[in-house]
Image (cartoon, rainbow, N blue to C red; front, side, top):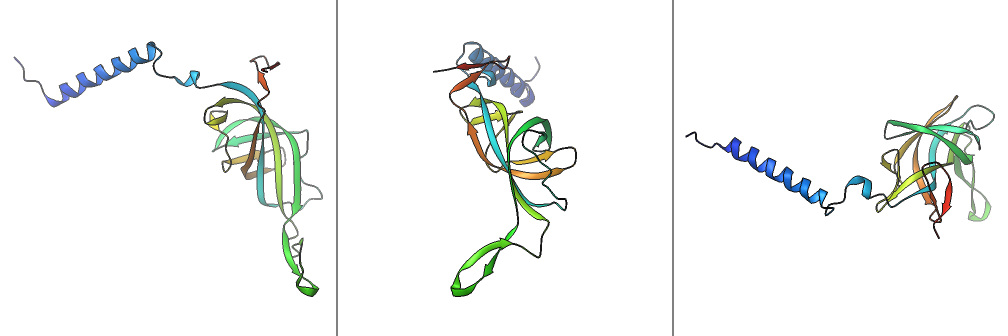
Length: 176
C-alpha cells in the first residue's frame, strides 16, 4: 500500500471544502452576488474637477450633453450631464479694515474648479449604489471625456432616488 502524503491530504480537504460550499449555496444558506442587489434605482452623482485649465471662452462640458465615464481606469459608458458649475480659481484679497474677500486669481486666469453632475441607473446593494461593477462613493477617482476634453476628477456627492424602481426595460414603477 502506498503512503499518503501531505499533498494528498491537502487535495482531499480542498475537495471536501468545495463540496460543503456548493451544498451550502444550493440550500440558500449563503448569499450569492446576484441576491445582494436590493433594487435598481436612478442616481445622480457629482464629480469635482480641481484645477482644470481652460483657455477657451467657455467651459467645454455642457448641460444636456453626454460625457464618457471611466471609473478606476475601466471605461464604463456615456452618461447625461445634468448640471455644470464652473468658476475660476480664487484667492484671498486683502482690503481695508481687515476684511478679506475672494477674487479670481490673477496669476492663474485659465485655472478653473468645476462640479459636474451626471445621472445613471444603479444597482442598489447594502453597501450602496453600484455602477459598472464599481461602488459609487465619495472620493472615487473618475474621468470625464468628451469630444474636446478629458478631465480627471473625484466623486464628491452621490444621491440615490429611493422612491422608484427601474425595470430592465427602463420603465419607472412606483415602489410605494
